[in-house]
Image (cartoon, rainbow, N blue to C red):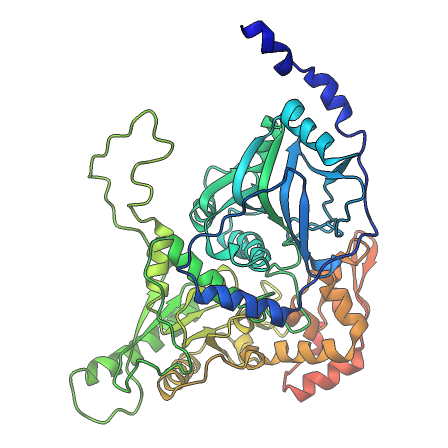
Amino acid sequence: MMPLISNVFNVDKNQINKQHYSNVNYDKNDSTSSTSASSLLSEINKHTMNITDSIFIHYNKTLETTIECVGSPYNQSCLYHNLYYVDSWYMILTVKGKQLPSYSIRTGAFTMVHTTPSKRVFDSYSHLERFIRTVIDPKIIPSVTLHFSQPWHDNIGHALFDGLYPAYVALIRFPPRHLHPFRILAGIDNCNTCWSEDIYSRFGGLGILKQSVLNKISKGHWFMFEELVMGSGTLCQRCTQPNFQLPGGVELDGSRLFRDRIYQQHGLIHPIIRQKSSSEGRTSDDLLLVCIIDNKRFTDEDREEIHDAINEINNYTYSYLNKTAKLQWPLVRISYLFYNQLRAQNLSSIQINATSFDSRSPTYELIENNFMAQLKILRQMDIHITGPGTGQMYQTFLSDGSVTINIGGIRPWGTENTDKAYSSYLEQYMTSGTPYIKGLYYPINERQKGIKKDEVIKLIRQASQLILEGFSLPVNVHNNLAPDGQLFVEMCEKDKEFCSSVTKRIPEGNSHCLDFWVEDFVHEHRQWNAGGFIDNGRNISCSFNHSLLHELREKYGIKHSKSNE
């Protein structure tokens, strides 16, 4: 009987592949649906309260592609139902006369151009269904898939906050999908040492699908994503906002939701939750845990001063432990950590036999990894101290009512102990985008002189007093910025053209202006100098109101040397 049905399946695939782009249309003028941040946050919180509800499942009632988009065309995220994929590209299958929103999105933090799926239009739904069922017969990828592209995922800071975080914020825009398991479709390069891929897989819950693999298999073969969310390109940590906050961290509660899911999906008890004050659940006699994280920007002299501060404070604490004498300062215990030296418990001695059908290690969900070991320390920290760079990214994972101290660094690189040096905090927007912690900073006019023991002690004692006296939650996020960060926010309000040049990630923009660090701007370094700088015979400069900057530097008490320019 087999010959009777063989012709149904022996379709000329080559002929199909020649035809399946023939009816591609691009709707550039379609309207865009949008949702205000306040109403969306209300919707998110409604689902957050019902986190134990039954899992969300989208039951397709049609094979046609439908689309929902949130946000402006510049910064929108889209949820595609029944989005098809063939020959390394997305395909929308729809019916003549069906209105679709504008569905172009950015797939990655450093991608200026928009991604626009192709589109094939059928005369009727019956034609569309017949094409899908009898011609292409796609492999369905069920449930929710979250797509993003990610360069440099070998660096955990970029991997978390230029790849995973912005994609997750895009997913938050379509609640309650951000609370349930989803798959990650990652546009990443092959990397044998990138443990961030394990974080991606665990975070989603349904594993990770590499786009490079999908591209190879999709040659001449069709796939259908039941639900695919894309559009995270301007929600990254290096996407400067006029309010100088981590995008979505405050207005969409993205920082807290991201933190909580990180702990949940790695099988760890969540950090302590406090509702109104940092002092909730604490007493004045509590011993606070302080961790100073080593930083490549520390000099040998800096480390000596830091260790002298650690010894002085720890000695004070040890002398008062188990005594009833009145305390002059809160009791704290300080540890000096190297994140890359934290290791999970070694259980390699336990013999587990894998079978040939095990798709992954039988111990995958049972044994901790080194990232979990780091998280276990982070959730206990009352005060987190480090300099600029990757170490700052972890502050998002602190418990409610914790303090992070940005001890700063020196810019430009290699100018220590010269009159060209100025203080640098780099990722302070991470702090202002995390409303459940308090941020403190090494004095901005002192850091270029090197780290000093007395300043470190003063900051730690200030932080411990703030915690036990009780600072309000959520914090005033503007006050979580250093003086130069606050200066930038006001500059952005008063010089709109400048603000647009450093925040709008558009193809025709000046990439040198988008390569923005607030300390370089405040001290008019390189492209921010009145005359710019010369690169391969070409003058590179970014325009702004220099007189206004000089006024604001004075207002915020930031000392400036002409030798910096």
